[in-house]
Length: 150
Image (tube, rainbow, N blue to C red):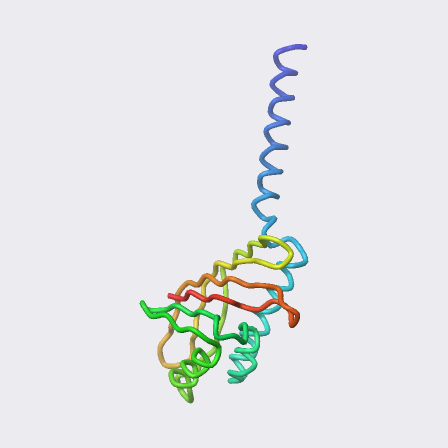
């Protein structure tokens, strides 16, 4: 084999390896579970934007073991989390919620985590930050069991 042909083959193999690596990097969100989770987040933001806090909370695990961390505080339990939202978001404070920059990582058929950004706009000021949520697939579908927002 000539040196030129060997170089062409090596370049072809390198391009193929890079293409495979690119596909693998996108793999976390390119599966049915990831699309189900993306639908959960879309439904959550739609409920929030309709000022339907119970619809928004429907995608959290209805358990006293649910955890939410933000601003150096930890809240345990679905009801405590609902109470926090009812206290902190009402009337003019509501705004429109948008999720972005999502990275969905499915760990197995019943577990996943999501990294992303949130933004609430339209309240006279814009709130924004990052979040990590852990989800489990329960009998009701994918539910958030832990939420860490900053």
